[in-house]
Length: 329
Ligand SMILES: [Zn+2]
Image (cartoon, rainbow, N blue to C red; front, side, top):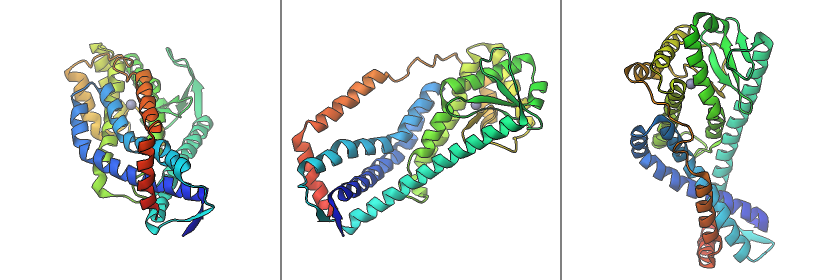
């Protein structure tokens, strides 16, 4: 197929993303059980961070390779011919890439729309109130079973059912509020959206890549454990209160309305027993969220250094260009 210069660049970039993403995702899928085992040996906060980074790595690295190698080598070394041939293989890979990105964007957009709709539902049916120790107002909703959640992305708000408020003791309510506050500080709803926006390797479900799904499930579990730890802060009585609150809220049942971008106190019934056991068997430590946080400036310097090395290496770009020439035909 004959395509103009810039359309050919777009096609090549998308096809390159597809191939690099596929290779890195297969690699990460293969490493997933090892990454999970490593995460289980660290504190929940660090474990959640590592699993999120591992899950996002294939997509982010593929974007970086396209931006740092594919695009510069094409712009620098490809003569600006008006039209050029593009092979069917390259075109197919580009179309698969477009479909994967489209599905991811649709998924993210749907979650945002549902989240906005849920906010409207809370405003309509809920009664705004202030709780002790809470800076922002809380929506209290009648007849919403065991609803105790933080909903929204930019300014997440607490949504609690009237039944939960009436049934929890002061200590249990305080521990539960601290748990949701921990989710707010960690911006877990935003991370949830980020995971939805990550494109799949193929625009359809591939059972062979179950390792990547296990990284996401692991992230969700350790995120809850990390919020429990920060809520408890090493205090044994708070630990017991939080365990009691979890059981009490779980017994009230799941609310009918929910948003894909919200973190509930009892997020996953399957993990409830493990969480309660953890809280009752040993007082989870008050892990400082800032401790062990990846040193962002150092990471940025490293990434910039790598970027510079690639950009500054004409030999790399020439080799990449030769490779792309074979690929595009
Ligand atoms: Zn939670």
